[in-house]
Length: 109
Length: 115
Image (cartoon, rainbow over the protein chains, first blue to last red):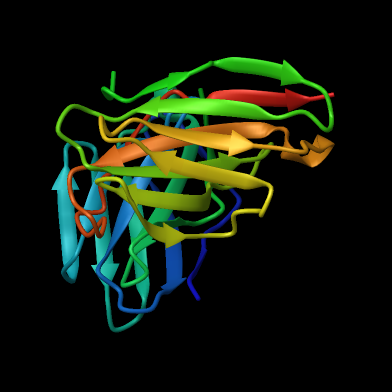
């Protein structure tokens, strides 16, 4: 089967840096994605890592270590609008994208 | 706007009833995925179709069924509805079959309330 674990809640202040961790168990692992979801809206794609290392996209970066079955999403210069749920998702030989249970990020002023 | 269209946006019905949710994928995308999201929960994979064929099945109840039509739109049928079926149902699409790029394009969802 496939399973992903991530913290349920993270709180940080505006302007800070926050890291959301994700560990996974996936058969035939291809890569790890990150999605953002605001209050029941459509999940939107943030990043994808298929290889080990850090991928940077503006204020957001994502990291993957295949040997440790671990990844993280790093959000820098936090803004109030970053308050949302963040999901890691693993793609593997089972074809579907399996999502973690999500991390609710609250950004305080 | 992801380009994925879902209807209806909201649906209220009674237990024991049957509903159909509709999804039009992004132009050119051949894969359609259905996910269920209950209150404050993650996205649970239900089923995937690629170019009209079922490709992968998740924890989809026997009361639920889906299909993808020749024009690539998809429908999710939910029957004998129970209170616990109340949830957001998302459709997503991608160009490839295996989801190996990790990027799905999600619709705005259909919010189902079963009373």
